[in-house]
Length: 463
Image 1 (cartoon, one colour):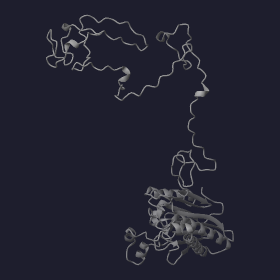
Image 2 (cartoon, rainbow, N blue to C red; image 1 turned 45 degrees about the horizontal axis):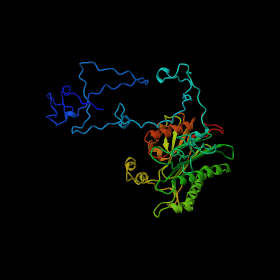
Image 3 (cartoon, one colour; image 1 turned 90 degrees about the horizontal axis):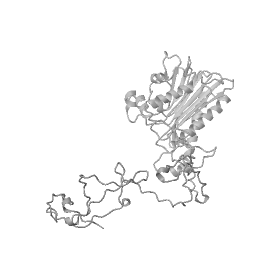
Image 4 (spheres, rainbow, N blue to C red; image 1 turned 90 degrees about the vertical axis):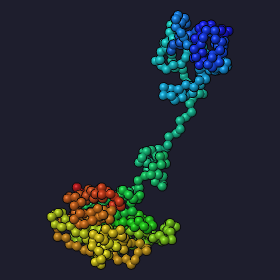
């Protein structure tokens, strides 16, 4: 039952806090009905964290406690909320998460389950002193077992490729991980091969999405038992269909042709000429495949590539080429001059040969790398270039695509980039030259093969 407060105890309007005169029944400022002011309630008890409730104490005399509002200023009682109905916030002002659902009550006779080693505070929860401090865990009910966790992706079989990114997923036929979707490096993105004293390295570079270069290296024995080393480097024509397939087919066909002809006693220069023809036939055959016919647009070129190669045998250095890939001669004695042994089949080379431009002007032109000779079904009349040299001193032969010589164009620049021990460590030196191109920008695929001259005896290789 509510009690009416004494008027003398109300010195301010409970609604607008306007000072009141003794005997006022209504506030002169807001019109609040002073007769509706309830009696001052006792102080609410404070609940301790352990659940104990302290005994209520009376307010000290002489303290003017504030009166809680119970009206909206128009005579209507203020709404009352339970604590659970008022949304709370954390210390940062964010709404608190909803409370978890209440657990069903446990039978009074059964002890509350607790983790092993957890002790209860008897003074706070009312347990008797003779109750045990620890309770054993109850055996779980098999009917309430949690749902099984989602199965992890199956581990790839030993014969399957594993993703280089997550190291867990299987790589599908398109080159993507079935677990994380990461595109895998292609096998041709970076290739290295060493065959006796000859070695080659090919890299995709930093700008191209695939490696369109290819190479073939190998060793053979001439009929008299003298050693011969072979290197073929091919550069796919990016504007043509399937340039990567063209370079791979050409390098394989040329390499196989040379390694088969030299042991039969074919002169190395003739063997090189025949190898270029074999490479041309292999690339031409790609244009006749149904796959190419389906992919080829009306104005798209057939598969095409360039080729450059070198043979070191019996004191001879034979080179052959079609296109703008090159061969350089770098002597072991760096006090003697190096030399470039090939001439480009390119617009720039034609301008220089015709005397219309200097070499610097021609290769600075945007048309400089437009090739005038290549291997492919739509090439002009094929004119394989071959040349034979008899160096009078030891050195190393550098066979490369324009992805390297763009960063070391002159013979002197190439000699500066070749390590001093290249003849003894061709594979290491090929890696160094590829790194030189990548450090320079890596705008194109980079491929280089190194052959020491003269050819070391069979079985010799990189140190």
